[in-house]
Structure formats: C-alpha cells, structure tokens
Amino acid sequence: MTNLVTTLANTVESMPDSVAISFDGNEVTYETLWKRTGQFAAALSNHGIGEDDRIAVYLPNLPQFVTAFYGALRNGCIVVPMNPQYKVQEISHLLADSGAKAVVTLSENVEAVTEIQADTDVERIVTVGEIVSNGTEFESFLADETKEIVERNDDDIAVQPYTSGTTGSPKGVLLTHHNLASNTRSNMELLDPPIGPDDRLIGTLPLFHIYGMSAVMNAAMFTGATYYPVAEWNPQEVFDCIDTDGITVMYGVPAMFNDMINQPNADDVDLSSLRFVNSGGSSLPLEVLEQFEKLFDTELFEGYGLTETSPVTHANRPGARRKGSIGQPIEAVNAKIVDQQFKDLPRVAEGPVDEDTVALEDVVGELVVSGPNVMAGYYGLPEANDRAFTAADGTRWFHTGDLGYWDEDDYFYIVDREKHVIITGGYNVYPREVEEVLYEHEAVGEAAVIGIEDDRRGETIKALIVPAPGSEPGIDVTENEIREYVLANLAEYKHPRIIEFCEELTRTTTGKVQKYALRQNE
Image (cartoon, rainbow, N blue to C red; front, side, top):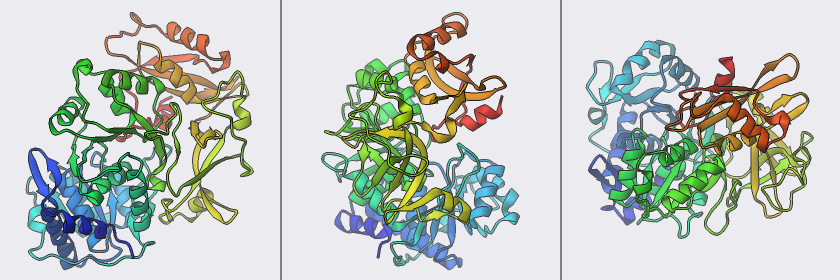
C-alpha cells in the first residue's frame, strides 16, 4: 500500500536533522516537520474528521501549507488545494463541490469563508496569521499528541485539485496516492544526477497547483532536499534567494521567465548555482527561452503536463532536448497524436517542421496520453469522464485537448489548444504560431492571439500586446508596424487584422492566459 506520507517518514528516519523547509530566515528540520504533521493529523481526528474527508488548504506557499498537506494525508484525508487569491464566488464553488469539512487559510480570508460557510459542509476553520474570532489559530489547533499514519491503498484519492478554469468552470480532479508518487519519482529522475539531499528547490510555483506540489514540494520531501517556499512572486527576491542560498533547482512558468529577462539588472544576476531550470504550465515562447539562456548562461528545459496527469507527461532533459518541443514522454507515460477517428497520425522525420515542406493539417492532431500518473477521473462528473477518456488496444487514453505533432525520435510539439484554434476564411490558424512571431519583435513584451466573430470570415484574428519595457504604443511601435511585421513572416491569412495594446493580459495565478476571458471582453 502507498501513502505519500510514508515516503516522508522514510526521509525523516534517514535524515531527521536535515533542513526540510527554509522560509524567511527560519529553518524547519525533517524531525520537526514530522512531529507537526502528526499533531495536525491528531487534531483533525480529535475533531471528528477522518478518512476520505476533504480538507481545503487555502494558503500561499508557507511552511503551514506543507504541514497541513502531509498532516491531512497522514490522517487519511483528501487535500483540496485552493488558490489563496480566490474570492467568495470562486471558493464557493470549490468548497460546495468538494464537500470539504475543514479549511486552512490566512486570517484575512476567513471572512470570505464564513460568508458562504452555511452553504457548504465546512465545520472547522484553521487560520494562519492574526487571531480572528471565526477560526482557530494554526498553532493552537495542533494537538499535543501525534497520530500514526493511516494506511491507504494505491488507488485511494490523495488530492483533489481543481482545473485552472482557462476554458470554463473548474473541475475537481481525483488524483490517487499512486498517481502522485509515481509522477514525482519519474520527474525527479529527469535530472542528472536525480534530485537528492544536497539539492535546494525554490518554491516559485504555487503549492495549490499540482505542478508546484508534485514537482517541487513532493520531490524535496521524498529525497531530503531543502524546500524554499516563495509566498509571492517577485523576480528580484527570487534572484537574491538563488544567489544567497545557492538554489540548485527551479521550476517556473513562462510568465516568470519572461519577468526575469525583463528585469533592469538581468545582465548582472548570477544564477550559476542552478543545475536545472524547467518551464511548464503553458507554452514557452522560443524567444523567451533563448533570451533567458543568453542572459544567464543557464539552460532552460521545457516540459509539459496537466492537472489531470499529476502533472508531468513530457520533458526535455539534459542530453535529450529539442528547442520548440515539449520533449519526450517521461518514464511510464505513453503518448501519441491521433485524428478525430482516434487513428495515429504519421510522424514527421524531425521537428520542428517547416511549413513550406510539411502541411500541418496532415500531421497535426490531438495529444492523448496514458500511464500511472493519469487521474482516476473528474469528481462527480460522469459525462466529463466519458469525454475525457477513450479505451483502445487495452489502454485507457486521456484526451489532453492540445493539438500537436510528433517526430520519429519521439519528440512532441504542441501547436495550440484545440479550443483556441481560429478558423478564418476556411483556414485553421494556431494562435501560438502567431504569438511566437510577435514575441520576436523587440517592442513586444507579451502577446496573446484570439479569434473574434466576423460575419465575412467566420473569425478575425486579434492580437493583444503588452509593450516591452520602454516601448510606448503609437510612438515606439504602432499597430500597423506590428501588422506588417507578422505579414512579413507568416502567410497573409494568419496576420492579426486587429491589434490592441494593453497594460497586462488576463491570466490565472499560475501564469496561463485566460483566452476565454479575453474573448468575453469583446
């Protein structure tokens, strides 16, 4: 039987005095962390909360998140991680849908929880920060005694994160102990040497998201490495932490790396302690990758995954990398590109392909995956589960909803989200291709391409652009200049007929552009 806490217990036994968490100048050893998880587990049990009950952890990256996460699992509970930036309407859906019996949150968020508490199953609110009347302060909540590990089966649910909502209402994703354990271990092995006790992992990715939880926090706890939580993204503070604390491993999203290369002191930053830097969560513009590597003399490896896959399915890695690719499937994961009839599409000889020699419509299809990391299903959504999976050749394949192609060396290339494809005048246009060109323009800091309704063409292409630092729209760069730049680099039907400069793009807190929200603003 597997319980994620068992792996942490093994780490504690072998290196009790090693530093598990370093935060704000304070260090927590593995032995201390283990005691606190046991106290949290006992406290839950003392309040009648037990096996299979949901515990919502509504916190930023803090040491208390780690304690609550492993403490809940130690008690046989299921963790429901929630974005600490969510407001009443957003947490209302998550708490009501999950049936969480307890919430661990910042004191400042207690009012939001209590406002909708009567419509949920929440019985207990545990707070971090100032003492408030409607909650029990975290340290006071901990029991004096500790509780032993509640045994769980491999296929028991451990975590129920919610999809980010980039295309609609968030869905609860059922991830088992085995899903998470297998994916964490496979992802750790991508490094050469694998993540180990001498590593220092910086927690720039939010822990409420499976990417930060699995690839960073779990990886550290599994191996005896030190985890450095970052409560709020600030590139300058991250630069300082990497330099001062000798951080060796960093996982991030493209928006973070774009921020880093655009810092005014980027030329003077020393990131030499990093031995592995990974980007995931959304597509990494090639221009951002190349600027990062040039500025910091550090390789940036792109990977791919989804909440539903715990999350990593593909990765570039030392000795096996192609720029522009999401990499090869990681250990135990199978993947392929299929057409609408679920037939395998032909591979290209080697990617990325040149559209002058290869017609994308002949090789682009949906990416489907299978493996021990793929979720048990969506919580309470049988119809969504039916749409999400296809059984073929004795294998249960998960539909990612992403379009791409593959090559003969098993490297995969994502073209775009299936729901983001723009059909204009009968032609399919993949927004990512246009965005890649836009990012190459020196006056473009960020870009998002969407389709808007058009009576003549069906859809018209629109580009929303955040100017690069120091570039003033209408003075340093004009709409017509951007339009002509794209026309010079892509087929005529792919150029954005509408250009809009803006101060920022609507994003999820994990850095994904919310294109459905951008379209709703039209």
